[in-house]
Length: 157
Image (cartoon, rainbow, N blue to C red):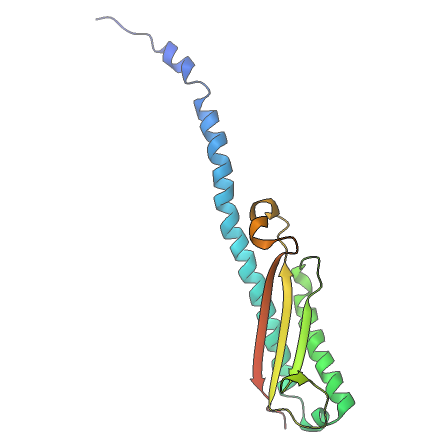
């Protein structure tokens, strides 16, 4: 029985593994970028939602005497907006600053009457610095726009 030397086919296959790895690595990076991007989106949204909820809870429990006074009601609304700004400060949003709106019965909190509902809204852009080249077609130039909105009944005493 004659033996066929196997050295020759091995030489032809020498770089195949490296080529396969190079082709598959780019696909694997793209497949890794999508779940990480979605995880960051959900994290940013959850932090923003918690921030507006905390601000709405604070503003809905402010005493009625303070909500009836025009200057004090505006100060309390500004404090609620500051609560939101402080809690979302660590998110490092996109190039545009987050917008926080605080409303009492659908208009800015101005006092003179006790509101029945409190609404706090934040609009922010989530800019993906890590996977921007891969997810840029989803987010655009300014990032992915996220909105967190909470409306509560006023329960102050």
